[in-house]
Image 1 (tube, one colour):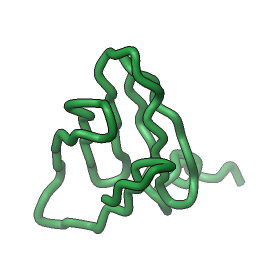
Image 2 (cartoon, rainbow, N blue to C red):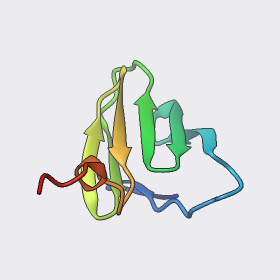
Image 3 (tube, rainbow, N blue to C red):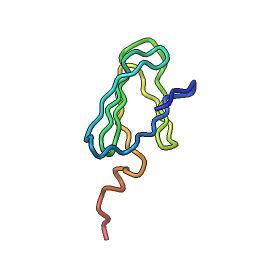
Length: 88
């Protein structure tokens, strides 16, 4: 994890020993930004506030998470489309 002015950059390394990882961080004016990292995805929850959305960069893709909301993002290489069996 790296904090930059343009966003919270995530690049989780695989941790086979841990099936889940949970941490809360303070980012800019947001307290307790909740990060839950699982084997194939990460959840970012931003507590309710009057602040701006938190911009998250994961695998080169940028997403905004508004205060009072949460988003699940697929880790690079583990998109939901890639998990579906092909029809053919």
